[in-house]
Image (cartoon, rainbow, N blue to C red; front, side, top):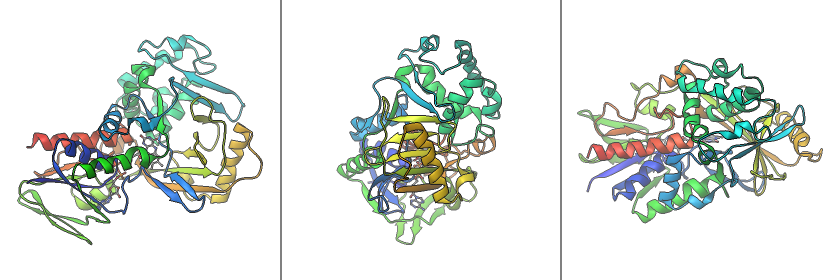
Length: 414
Ligand SMILES: Cc1cc2nc3c(=O)[nH]c(=O)nc-3n(C[C@H](O)[C@H](O)[C@H](O)COP(=O)(O)OP(=O)(O)OC[C@H]3O[C@@H](n4cnc5c(N)ncnc54)[C@H](O)[C@@H]3O)c2cc1C
């Protein structure tokens, strides 16, 4: 019986593997780590003595591929969020607090309501968002939208940094336009904020592994693929410290590794090669979860804060310039912001900083031009991963979509 060998058990690999397994295809899943999830996982943190996510991940109800994936693996109920499309913000400089609220339908009448839109903005400001429809890869976010005053400072800039993990002065507006087209432009029903009820692994990883186990998938954890053997324009073998696998003539391979690994395995392929960090600081503390369970922060070190079961977690995106910050100084700066925003005590509680150095590729025009499609010059090898040419930024939705695309390419090729 022919098999599909999926390399990498991050979101892209799990998406591809579960799509194939659901169709009755025999799958072998290789993962270099002892656990699955890649850049989207939970773990037990010994410093804080509790379970943490490697980083806060925010999704939107309009993330269709993600919803379909969760439906497939039986985990739809583990993704939660407010029952209305709302986004609370706190301005740490002025002390102002507001909640952006959308109506559910496609016609955005919410912009007519002063108490629903961003303070000090007018309906006409939102009309200017149509510029995004014509955004080309070379258009930079700050050039295209930066003249929109409070709408830019209080919504578009934090939204762009969250979606693209790249400073708006160098980020392409095209992937932001794709996100807006699939969420805001489809109305509030497609723009509801969503996040895991417990943790990333409990929502995206553990149910997928259980699904694959039930469908007879063969797991190879701790199996780093260090090289592909190629003959007559097809992959004939996978090799690594613990792997020596022959790829049979009817077998196929999906490479769902991050771009820097894909580049080592396929040196002639062009892939993104500039990355942006994300830092998450987890404090052993609690804040009022409010209506949404999270807040956007304006004018602070971090852009978002999430109330979790055992910790308060903040996200600092596009954080390459913060990677080498002294941990105690950084934590004190963030704690000072949290004190101002949420009236927390002066004494800083135990904290943990999780640095993801290569959280996403940099969404610059030059890097977008390096994204490969799923098809390779090797007849039985397909690519998946958030860095492939999905049109979306480096996100869970992009990774899951790429995995589904790779699985469909397998079907097309028989
Ligand atoms: C801190 C942080 C916050 C984020 N926030 C958000 C957010 O709010 N919303 C959102 O949508 N996205 C967010 N993202 C992005 C999202 O997590 C990624 O886009 C997505 O997880 C990438 O999945 P992937 O499968 O493409 O890659 P990866 O997760 O990198 O998976 C690749 C897998 O391949 C394995 N592997 C590597 N080399 C080998 C090898 N040689 N052999 C075998 N296996 C190998 C790796 O161990 C890994 O498991 C965030 C990312 C980070 C790090």
